[in-house]
Image 1 (cartoon, rainbow, N blue to C red):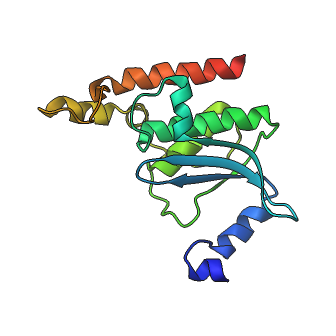
Image 2 (spheres, one colour):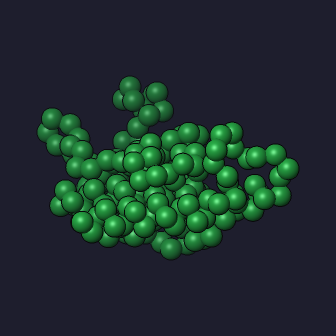
Length: 176
């Protein structure tokens, strides 16, 4: 019960997820990074079948920051592709102690995994609008600012097109 006292594990929720008999899509978000893992319980501890981090998107040419909604979707898409390659075709979403707010980054990870082909039970109402997933809201905000939104070479007004390019690269990589 130490992990419950430390506010790290909800054992009631974990038991309900384990009773499903399916692997869990564990989605964890921070301000700077997104992590997605497909894990199954085992006698020696959880076994990870596939994993992806938002930092892995750099391999596909992602130049934008890695803590936003578009990168959450792409991380889920990448994790879903890796799960299918590992033989995992179905899962249940494990949001941990995060609040289930419709349209948040956790559900964007789920949407990416579903679009990759992993069967995850979900309600369409909790998924973000496609315009938000593509980052159009970020591009619109960047366009109305006088100074650049992000430091460095990346222009946030190009985020939706950049998202589409990286999504296409991930999908093509899965088809090879």
